[in-house]
Length: 116
Image (cartoon, rainbow, N blue to C red; front, side, top):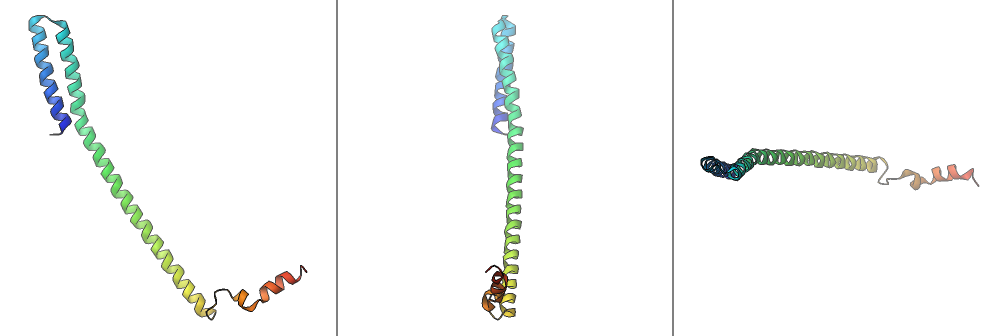
């Protein structure tokens, strides 16, 4: 039993006892206090399941977040490996230089010679 449920049960019993006392003595203030205490007991009794449900929801969200983060990291790792493979292939195709334009220099000269 959850702590809130135990508190609710205790308050409910106390409220019932106080209500009975109020009935026997005709004390309307005791009867009203008993009703207040029983309402408090119901609220406390409802807090237990609500707290448990909130905790379960939080745990579920944490698991989903962890799973999503794991998928994200895996996707990043795969993209990095693919980029490294492309980089290696580019280096093999270009004779080791990643920028063939800079190597030959002709593209820059051809594109900018008309602006002179």
